[in-house]
Length: 247
Ligand code: BJW
Ligand code: ZN
Image (cartoon, rainbow, N blue to C red; front, side):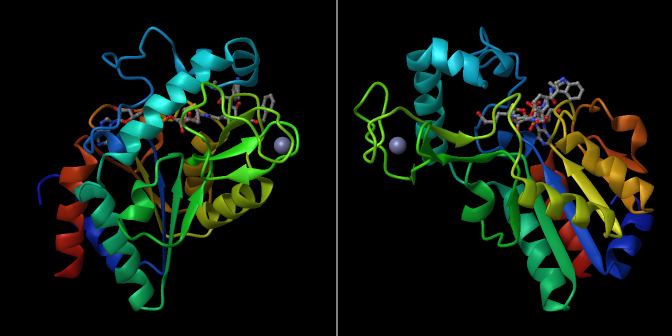
């Protein structure tokens, strides 16, 4: 148990509500590249270059090529021990009649696939596409087409994710802030804490006196804020935390 404090386990045992924010690092051990990785196939483009509407309108084929590559990669990987530990944590609290909320910035389906239920997807879901004109939404786009189009109106489909400069769903974001502000323990796991408004969530949790914990092998941009920093991989640490919690 040298990787985390007994204080954390005590807080978790006494918590009535636990909120977790995850980022790309949680899926890294499943083989999904993170956004700011140095060695990805796409590292000549930063997410800022690709994940915005201007790029989509200017370089539609390139942006779709990137998304199709990622969709394909994501469909072929499985959740890792970190995802499973989080779904076990949800079960642990809900079985006790307590609250557990998982807020994710990830657009992959790995939390769902590992059995988590109460998930707030802040940045959408890559498996869904929607029409840029009529908003028709579908999970079954025509993968053969270089640029998939809407079966209702013929306009371009786009991935149903949140790009830079776009607003997050107000309903999901309000709920995320509410759960951050009303929890006893807040985890920020596998995120660089560079992208807003998600990066504000631990700040709000701390302001409302939650015990805030970061799990990340590297220190994030906001590491200094946290009550406890666990500089290890989530797939290694989360199962250990669950094991202690269940004792
Ligand atoms: C491990 C690990 C292991 C590795 N275990 N860990 C100035 C101030 C404040 C805000 C802004 C600003 N200028 C502009 C903005 C707004 C902008 C923003 O935040 N920009 C910043 C870059 C400065 N935000 C927005 O535009 C948002 N919308 C918005 O604010 O609306 C209002 C508005 C409207 C108009 C104008 C201005 C404001 C929208 C943000 C949407 C982000 N979208 C993306 C793409 C989603 C679709 C897709 O997937 O394609 O979301 S970008 C990308 O970043 C993706 C991620 O969800 C997000 C966060 O990345 P994440 O998850 O943190 O990944 P990484 O790669 O950064 O980090 C991985 C971490 O894991 C690392 O730390 C590793 O160490 C760690 N790790 N292995 C645990 N095994
Ligand atoms: Zn349409």
